[in-house]
Length: 294
Image 1 (spheres, rainbow, N blue to C red):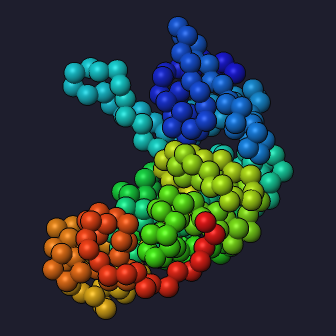
Image 2 (image 1 turned 60 degrees about the vertical axis):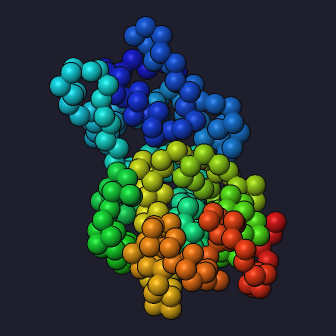
């Protein structure tokens, strides 16, 4: 499909919203080609009429809009992305009935589980969301979580993979398992995943969107729920092990946390496969694994 947008920001906006669009620029024309793997992943194809409607939606409703150039007059513009339901609505028009957004939290910490959440939003969902879930303060995120939980018709399911199983599987495999399991538990027939990796154990058609929590509402909601649930787990863990500062660091490797590991040693919720624990002479691991599939 060939689009001739009034300015380059529309092209950049679409590229941000849809990872699998390959963009070519030829003089004044912008050509967007849907990659074959996207078409094969569940039939997510856009006709020229859909492109036209999408272009008008972006122009009129401005879910993404350019901000002012910098003082040097550089042509590069910052694009502010507000989550929409464009991809989800297209999938529903293509015949899918239960489209979920899936996101995870907790890949990087030294302690605690990795948590993935899948969310199916009702048609009438109207809560305003920020363009990037990481821009929420803790208080704002908790307020948004409470609004989401109280909104009628929001369906969600979460999967948590423990530190013991992260060490057994590795963090990549553990994360992929959590994403696929969350989508299965919510009963979806199509999944929109944040990021660029598709779990090998995913049993339904799916599509990955880089920075999907910033562009797609169902993924944004999933990221909020997953973050709040994992944070609460770490707050509860802090009550048992206050020396590590879990309430504040949420398991990430702050200086206080690393010093506590060196002075006291790890808890069962620490990931022994992560540095600096992987380099420590620790006793045999007697933690109970959930025996997740390898």
